[in-house]
Length: 113
Image 1 (cartoon, rainbow, N blue to C red):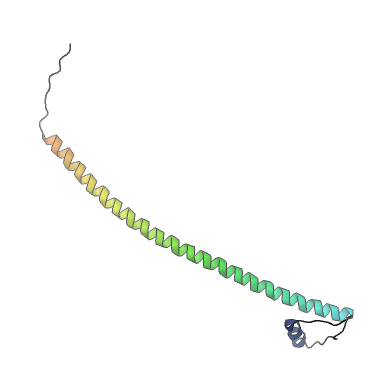
Image 2 (cartoon, rainbow, N blue to C red; image 1 turned 90 degrees about the vertical axis):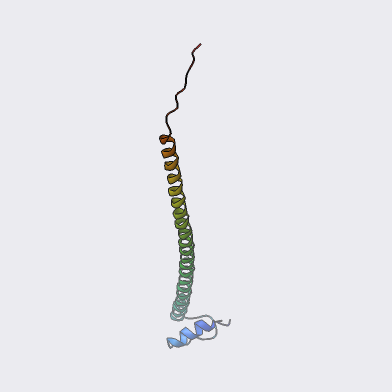
């Protein structure tokens, strides 16, 4: 049988200075080397996936933070508007109270039958 290696496996084997026969079966030492190379490739892929997931997570957090910041600005503006309105209404209320307290108290007659 023919031994099929990916380009990545061939590159790593060459990098380590190892050549494997093109036909199976492999010796135990050759199998260990091939397993080691394949494990390195899996680890590399896993690390890439982990970095990608982390980047996606951070991008999501950054967009949520930006949205929360924008909402916070809107709410601060709304609070300021409501505080101004509240102050205006308070002044109107105080003016009304002052007007009614300045009027002489009206006396009325109550008839009990």
